Length: 89
Image (cartoon, rainbow, N blue to C red):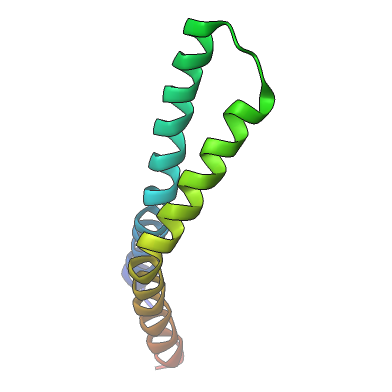
């Protein structure tokens, strides 16, 4: 298997990972920023105030972006298993 194929597989792995986790990560970062600004503005330092909105938003994003994430990973696994069949050729 030439090195170009290894590089292509590595590239597709990283791209699939970024596409899969980015909706959840971006939503968590945005809601964390909003809650952090709210806590700083009101001087409320309650731990559940930071945790509960993140939990709800991340759960909602998982429900909404779940089909996209599953299709991305399914396509990636199909590509990987196809490439595994070509290793000895």
